[in-house]
Amino acid sequence: MAQKTALIVYAHQSPGSFNAAVRDVAKQELAAQGYRVLVSDLYAAKFRANSTQDDVTGDLKNPELFQYGEETMHAWMEGRLSDDIVAEQRKVEEAELIIFQFPLYWFSVPAIMKGWMDRVLTQGFAFSLEKMYDNGVFKDKKAMLSFTTGATQTMFQPDGINGDINVALWPLQNGTLHFCGFQVLAPQIFWSPAHCPKPVRTMMLDGWRARVKGLLAEKPLTFARCELFDLSFQGGFQLWPKVREERESQPYGITTGHHLGKPLPPDNQMKAQPVDEGSTRPDGQN
Image (cartoon, rainbow, N blue to C red; front, top):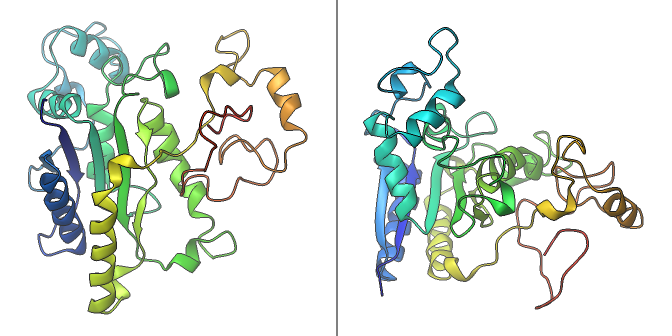
């Protein structure tokens, strides 16, 4: 049996950080399970965050109007992407599991990690109009966010000053990871470790270690299936009228993003929803 591979895309400036300790726990536990663990240390590698014409070698398709998405798609098809992008794409291809490890910056990933997503997940390689969401390129791979916050957990609750963390996670987990087809595992959130005493940080790492032991057996988060939508320009890529009618009697929206003007399904971006084995639910949450 071929050895499985995991990739940790890591973004922190300091080797003595709590994020580094979290990374190391994941490396150790995954290796103990027989995984080959790759790490993309973005700051150490001085990974370039900005998406520019330098990402393409050779002649441009349209030199008068540089369109990054179009040019990098053609460059990927023709083997003309820059070496640093190609190296990262090879890691993605090899990995069954990708963990993004970072401190939360402005409700999102650090710029250097956003640059990794912008540059590595090129059109064609990671997605297309025909291959997106649950029909996506990486539908057989799993991915997850693991991050630290400066704020406490209460500050990220629906009645907390920062608002519902589920809303903050939706663009990353649905708009990036699920869009590319990944099965998205529930995020691992380390709430405000900088303001916690050392015993609490140790408990956090122990909890992460225990989770990694069973990580690959976890069910992914739930998202609205593509079949619920009219995937045509004529239909506007919107929910089929029948699906919308069926949802009228439901207390919650389908997902955090597809809320349909209803209350958000609780912790939709935080926890995998329990589903009876073999059941198929019309709300798209199976």
